Image 1 (tube, one colour):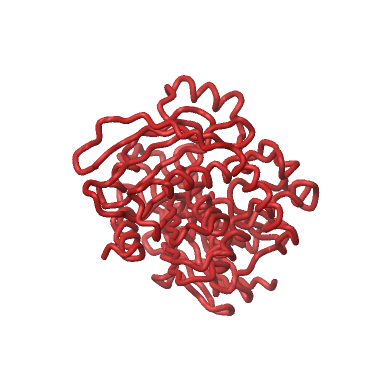
Image 2 (spheres, rainbow, N blue to C red):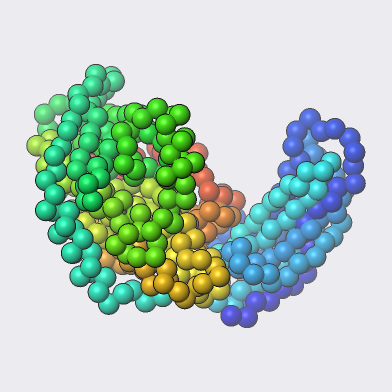
Amino acid sequence: MKLRTAAVAVAIVLIATAAFAADPILEVIQDREDGIYACGDTATFAVRLLVNDAPVQGTVGYHLSLDGVGQISAGELQVGAEPVTVSGSLDAPGVLRCTAWADVNGTRYYGFGGAAYDPEQIGPSAAEPEDFDEWWAAQKALLAEVPMDAQLEERTPPAGVGALYKVSLANVDGRRVYGWLALPEGDAPAPGLMNFTAAGVSGTGYGTAAGGAANGFVAMHIIHHNFDVETPKEVTDAMKAGELAGYPHQGRESRETYYFRHVFLGCVRAIDLLTSRPEWDGEHLAVTGSSQGGGLSLVLSGLDDRVTALAANVPALCDHTGLQQGRASGWPRLIPSDDPHGVVAQVAPYFDAVNFARRFDGDAWVTVGLIDRTCPATSVYCAYNALQGPKQILVYPRMGHAAPPEYGAARMTWLKQVCGME
């Protein structure tokens, strides 16, 4: 890939010693509001250093990269009342990232800008395994041999919710799946909504499931670890520092031992429960989540044919093999950078959301941030482009690993539409 740079300017060493009422802000803004460019176009980033909302003088350091990978150009310039500019271009689909930094009173502050070049042409970095479907069919068959052993503990539901249960279900390898089930008010059959949690080691409250039920769904929210959703924080903190430290990489040397094998199967088991409920309409089932939860939504859309729609915000688990092509891999950077073609690289494609996404032809709604350094936009687009059905992607050029303010309401409106509720 040829990478071209033009007039460049950005990074930081502020010449000031005064105390500031607010943290300095390093502003990096691309010249197109939507952040989308055609290959060969020039993207220009305007950079300012703001203290108490006013531009100040200083030295800015910068570099341009391929979505955080490699270095296209680097340098430093003086900033002041007017923004300095950094320009660059890509001649192949990808994301051009501008990283700027400033040292202010001994603290380094960063700013980021992103420009996506023909992003809907970004393809997968590796071929899928020939036995992908066969292997996952065998894993689901193992799950089917395990009785669900559904244990539901009824709780007092909040206003607007018909019923609420804490849930425990049997999974493979002697493990269990834990979460919440909430039912809507009334007797009419309702669509299903499965919420997957983001990364971390903690329990969760019933609010997410209850929110889905209050909006008319048979709703579940599950966690991805083998402990009760109401496990005390001091206990889960100890697990985070101990047995679950680095869980996204645990067992990655084998597809049979990798941690996410039982996570994916646990999600299927949760869908088993939801679709067994008499309250479910038997037709509509949406999966949703952010980050790891967004990645799990992509995975389940292709792993379980009962899924009819997915909504994924800044999804993880995408394009694990990106580093083999010199580009950004998605969270959790599964393949070791010092061994990009080793044994883990053979395991990773079985757990790549891209390979599941290409098997889904239902409705899909995805959000992406062009300066997301956790789940880089390159990896998100790779999975989005693999989806086979009606789809839309909401691009936020200045958003990192977050959710846009309007995300919750907009997502629920979309979910109701594709589930036949509006």
